[in-house]
Amino acid sequence: MYSRCIEKRNLLNDHSASDLLVEVTSLAQDKYAFELIAYQIMDNHFHFVIRTVKDGESISTIMQYIKARYAERYNRIHERTGPFWNERFKDKIIEQSDDPIKYCMQLLWYLAFNPIRKNIASDPKSYRYSSINCYLDENYRSPLKITLHDYFLWLGNSFNERVSNFLAYGHIFYHTYGISV
Image (cartoon, rainbow, N blue to C red):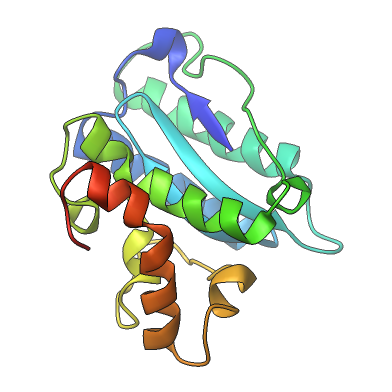
């Protein structure tokens, strides 16, 4: 799922704004039971891959909390009023796609290469506001709690085997941008 800043403005383009979104999302993780599978924070929008859990809050409640808390804090810090977000949010259920495993793996790579497509990073692994390293480096510690998707876990019996198979899904992106991951 994704959500854009008002008027598609680059309101998330500095570290303090993006750090604030990380902080508020962490608060949501403490408040509600849900799994954050992946995230990507861009200059004017963000992507979250979220799995709701049985007896947990709905995606709408989780997103309302994150977006409302973020807008309140951002507006207070920047002494502004009015809406921060352009629309509610857009989402798609991975498990309802034609090939859920392929869709999920390609979605993770699509998100990782978003900063490269927008010319704000040269390598997905170096972009600060991304969870892709959780899927590439067993020792990477994300500032947000990431739950590796079951589909990733099904790619092999060891982390290294999973990464090797996961990289195969990324070939379209890294060949397109001439980057080896």
